[in-house]
Image (cartoon, rainbow, N blue to C red):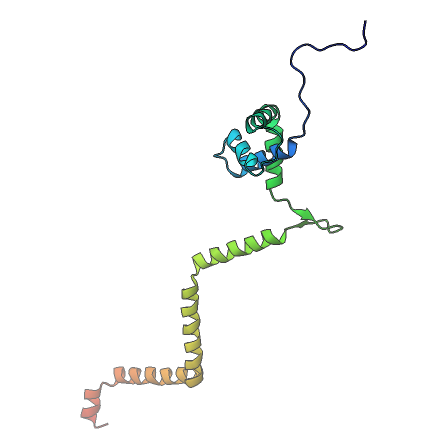
Length: 170
């Protein structure tokens, strides 16, 4: 007998490494949930023309590999898409990436603008500036003295009305 044993049926596949391309397909599917796997595969295929196989052959090969590994590929794609917090060496705490921090600042500014619109802030600042100018022209302590004198005059008018003053000759 011979040492080589002949296997029956179709020959095995070529063993081509399609994992980077299937990872691109998974990335497309994670980013756009409306796509179907075959549509995403056609999008990846359209990026190049030098595949070394016909589109139909390539599509069928990718579909069979996708069917067996789709869960792992999608999980890896979701992990690649999800931003990670890096740690500072020796710091022990978490680190927020600058782009994420800038996005958080922009969101906070938008929220602040919703609660306190910029045009209202500008009007409020102008009113405060006008009040400061008024305080320079008419200081608060002088205003208080004037108001007290006016109040004393009103009290005197209540106690001694003008028609009684005319009768008494004041």
